[in-house]
Amino acid sequence: MLIRPVEPADLDALYEVCLRTGDAGEDASAQFVDGRLLGEVYVGPYLMMPSGIGFTAVEEGAPSGYVLAAVDTRRFEAECEAGWWPPLRARYPQPVAEDPSNDDAEIIALIHNPESPPDEVVARYPAHLHIDLLPVLQGRGVGRAMMGRLLDDLRARGVPGVHLGVDARNKRAVGFYEHLGFEHLDDSDDVVMGVRLDEG
Ligand SMILES: CC(C)(COP(=O)(O)OP(=O)(O)OC[C@H]1O[C@@H](n2cnc3c(N)ncnc32)[C@H](O)[C@@H]1OP(=O)(O)O)[C@@H](O)C(=O)NCCC(=O)NCCS
Image (cartoon, rainbow, N blue to C red; front, side, top):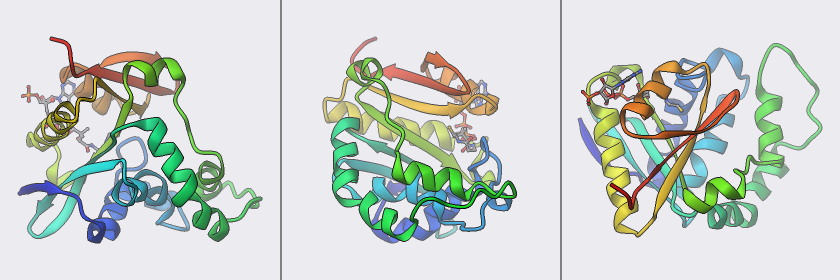
């Protein structure tokens, strides 16, 4: 297993990781007709926009996990408005007919109205991150190692804090983040957690 910086060529493999871990940490592939949608929101811009950074864990030659971050959330949002969302909005126009059998419409809505954390979170934790590993990599210390690489990188860039969102159903991930020193910033259905990088 090798951990290295992400490259644009990792896009398809990491979209697949995102789909296979997209239902509160479990496989979401049965919930989507278009299996690329989750990756278009949660992976693509971090590989392709200037404020995106990240690392992938390569297992037997295949990128099988990632930790991705936006160094500056507000700058990243502006970059996505300019360069990432417009072609996707054209490719996935709204309105989409509601179909209770899948979650495609929910993610297409996010392409048109992206999530944006409140100012009080961004002020103290200006970066944000996503981490997902295929089951083959879970529970082996890879998550800790990848998070370490990412937090060291953010610290070296002078970033004072990083936040993340996690589905409240994903108790394993919440426990993992707590264990690594993240604090709860908001406990709704989407839990928001953060860690300062310039304290302690
Ligand atoms: C959540 C995830 C990133 C954790 O990575 P991991 O490689 O499985 O975790 P590690 O093996 O590196 O564990 C690191 C440490 O956290 C601890 N830990 C892991 N899960 C924990 C939990 N639920 N509660 C408390 N501690 C936990 C481990 O015991 C380990 O402790 P140590 O290093 O002090 O011995 C990974 O399991 C994953 O990708 N899951 C599926 C996708 C997902 O849920 N992503 C998060 C979406 S927000």
